[in-house]
Length: 295
Image (cartoon, rainbow, N blue to C red; front, top):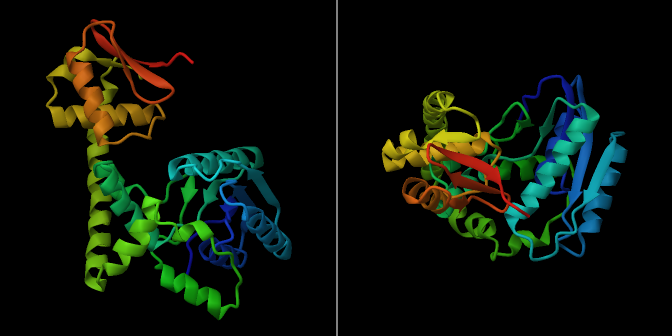
């Protein structure tokens, strides 16, 4: 099992679970790779402080800098809230340290789980290929099944922490992990991964075309309403989704897009459409204007 990480300085997210423990063990042996171990304590579990202590000792054993933060999100925090808080922390560490990118231990099972989860959520075509490496987030284990990581950890006598919430099936991801993914045959798993790869290529081509559409708009925070009204409904949803993502808004599903598109095409001038807790779209005579909501 190999990891492809270019020489440079990185922030590596280490939860204390087997995935990140294995990745850290592999990367400390990679020449010309500087690592900063970052751990985010969500504050969801009462025993999470033990995870932090474990990762701190691990970083000390490898003679690596260790940075952590506490979220104190509480045991009712959603997966989305926890993810946003964790990524905000990692990005802040990257910014302050001048690191090239952030490395995470997402693996092949995560790719499958995320695709299934996003299908259930109705996130559309983007959800099928959302988990991948980018310039900002390097994920060198995406081609490695979880079983191989466990085998590696046992072969090298590595210790890790088990997150007790991983068995809680009130979290949809855990339900998918324990009840859907294990039922896939080897052939089905291979075919699904191939389909996800193909969707990534298709999405890239679609995104290029959508970028060309949006390039002709008056401003990044405005869409020509007459142009938008004339678009077929399915295309309007894709244009809207791309426009929102370019503005940094990503936490929406197909139902939200449906509601916004209908409103953008039918509401009277002066009406506003809530996008999320921070943003709204104001309908003007000629444009759809993306604005901040009043607090």
